[in-house]
Every structure is written in C-alpha cells, then in structure tokens.
Image (cartoon, rainbow, N blue to C red):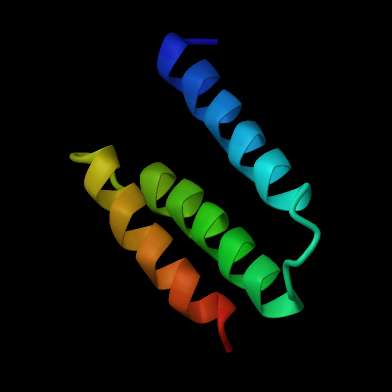
Length: 68
C-alpha cells in the first residue's frame, strides 16, 4: 500500500469518525458525505491522466447527488 492511499484512508476515517461523534447528522448529511466520498473514489479510479482532478469532480458530483 502506498503512502497516498494510506493517508487518504486515514483522513476518511478521521472525518467520518469526527462527524459521527457530533450525533446530529441527518440522513441528508450522510447522503452528501457518502456521495462525495464515493464520487471522489470513482472519479479518481476513472481518470487516468489526472487522478486529483477526477477525484475533485467526482466528489462534487457525488455531494450534489447525495442531496437528492
């Protein structure tokens, strides 16, 4: 496992745990969070030339799709 993957995974766990402990996340908040994470992962895996751009576009798209 490379360093970027390890750091990204640690960041996701930290953000998810931090949000979970507040106790006031609605279903819409969870949908946006999971949509953004899923979209970023999918965008990074699809984009061959620029993974960061793919992750950013996928994250934004997933965030807005999670609101629906």
